[in-house]
Length: 137
Image 1: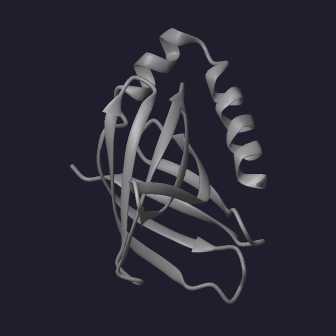
Image 2 (image 1 turned 180 degrees about the vertical axis):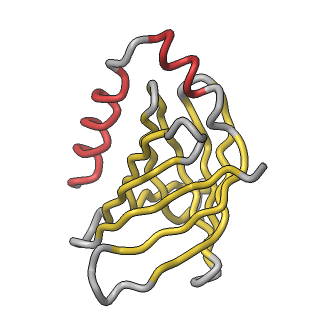
């Protein structure tokens, strides 16, 4: 129940940016990335993988493959200016097709070199960490 409140707050916060800055920055977000991250707990292992962002304007579809767990996470995101917020997790299969279940909220800042620096939090635990998405050129 906490996740919808956090997502609503993130979406409202992102949506308040100026439209012209939003359009300029978000036009550069779609593409493929190399992912590298680590949880903040000292016992957490570093992880790596790939991510793809598809979309335009301020709405994005996200798919990330974690090489260490051999698991794919999917999600959606909203961008404004130099900020991208996504919720990402597993896709559940039910009676009515796929139902998305977001597990993580990630907020990224776009650097001038095109790299996305992010911080994430898990919806149902105290787990949190940092992640970098580097564009594949």
